[in-house]
Image 1: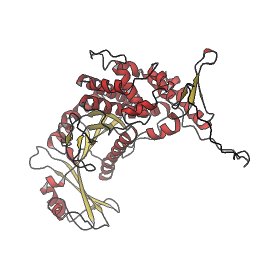
Image 2 (image 1 turned 180 degrees about the horizontal axis):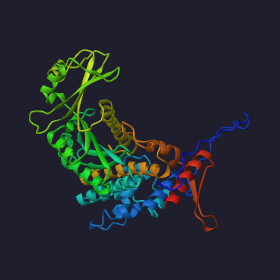
Image 3 (image 1 turned 90 degrees about the vertical axis):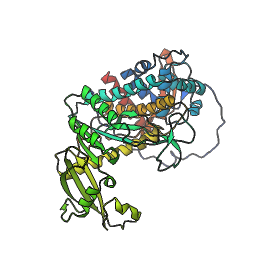
Image 4 (image 1 turned 45 degrees about the vertical axis):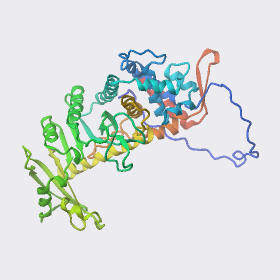
Length: 472
């Protein structure tokens, strides 16, 4: 962590004013003029400019695209950095770049005299290739790993799940698959690995939309585990997954790697387990809502036995699902059932709390789609869409990294493995700090950014800048 860490600044208490000092007597509409006054709508980007210089992001991005033979005026690293900032600002479509192409703060952040137009960015995405994607993935993963090493955590919890990215048009690598909200649309179905302690995306693997969650997941999971082990060899690893990853191969691999895990169990694939639940007469009470029993069991096709925890939850609502599901899912009026397989030696209460904590990953997906536009497909080329998705992931991770560098850890490890910081969403940071009007001037040859004298904005913005400066 940084030296002399500080807590979040307190809000300034408003001073009471007279009515005459507040209300105006005139409401005249002003005359409109458009001039180049070196005005910026994103003065708060100075915080991210300081972060980018601190970590050398522009130089790191340049190393991802040196292999490309084409030599445009704007390097591909600049285009990807522009995409990352574009998503930090909350814009979605590439065409939206036209509305800020003359902003002096963005030009200064990118080190340019003028920003590239939309066609230039589109062409740069069109020539992206698989090595570009692989190197950008490696860079994004390395930034998260360096943060974890700096924290010195005793344990790291990894959550694995997929998320649908739909498109209404044809794009290379898309396919029609299961899509709960937009049935029949073509989509990608990337697989994500997120770190519970920081809420960051460690890695993402792009896939077409017609594959199952577990399709090729074993190699991806193993690669994430090995990346953590290489950076943090003495750190305890944990993993959480839903029922789509339930298989002998994945469970055996996690156990052999010494990873503590919990995985949801699908009843519809295990009729023997369903009968075990329905014939159970004695359930141990966990609390008013939950009761359980556990068994050292294995499916008939598996080699080894594992700890299966079977839980029922008291439900006051009558079940109104399809009758055909009774053939596969345990069913009793007033109860819902679930099962997990685990190699943890915790109590059932703590093991369930740990497993239920994986729901926080859905919040990460929601933030990625709502605030960094991860669900947008900008081009017909697969590699270009992969780069855009990785830029969205990078924007999300940089927001988390900024707050981790500038504020102290606010939580210890909880049973659900909640994030160690109470992170502000990027949309909140954007409204509070980034989208502030300012003017760039050079009085007596000294570059100055002038903003309105809002004491709350001043206190928070200076806190970020001073903390990043102390860490340099």
